[in-house]
Image 1 (tube, rainbow, N blue to C red):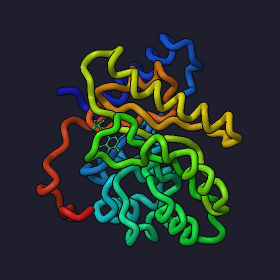
Image 2: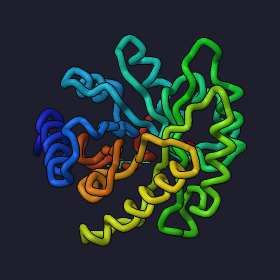
Image 3: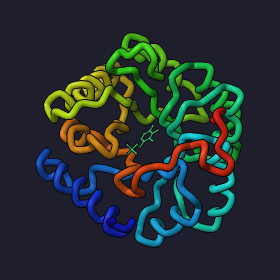
Image 4: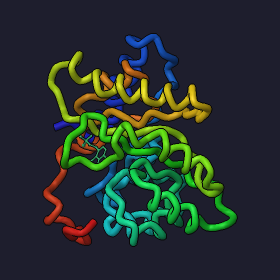
Length: 239
Ligand SMILES: *Cc1c(COP(=O)(O)O)cnc(C)c1O
C-alpha cells in the first residue's frame, strides 16, 4: 500500500495535471488536507512533507489535535457541519470556515472572533444539487445571505463551498461545480467580489478544478480510507 508521501505526491500531481488541462496557472489551487479521524502524528508527518493547510469536520475531535500541533505553522480550516452552540471555539481557533449556511452562524462567528486576530475567512456552503438531506443554503437564498455576511466586520466572505452528489462520469460531475461557479459570478456582478470556490474531494477533484475550484478538500486520497468514527478516541456521535 502506498505511504503518505506517495499519496501526497499523487494528489499534487493530479492537481497540477487538472490545472494544466484547464489552462489555469499551476498555483491556482490550494490543497486542504482533510485530517478528520487522523492523528496529530499523521498531520505532523504531512506537514513535514510540506503541507500547511488542514481541514477538520468535527470540533471535539479537532481541538486536541490543534492543541497538540500548536507549535507548527499550520492553517486550520473548519469544513464540517456547525451547530450554533459550537461556534465560539471555531471562531477562536480556525483561520477559515467553509460551512457557513445561515446568518445566525455568521453573526455568532463574527461576534466571537477574538480581537487582535485577522477577520475569519468564510465560505457559504450551498446545497447546489438540491438534495433534501444535505447541508447548505439553497442557491436562491445565497445572494441575500452573502450580502448580509459581507457587512460583518470580523468575517471576510471569501466564496462558496459545495459537496454535490457524487458522479462517476466526469461531464456529469462537472455540472454542479459549474453551477456553483456561475452562482459566484452572479454575486460578483452584484458587487460581492469572491475569490474562492471550495469544491472537489478525493474522487472528483479533477471535475472541480476544470470548473474553477480554488480549494480542493482531500482526505482519503492523502491518508487512505478513514476508520469508522466510533473507533476513534474522542469521537462521539455529536460532532
Ligand atoms: C471528509 C470531507 C472531505 C474529504 O473527503 P474525501 O473523500 O476523503 O477526500 C471533504 N470535504 C468535507 C466537507 C468533508 O467532510
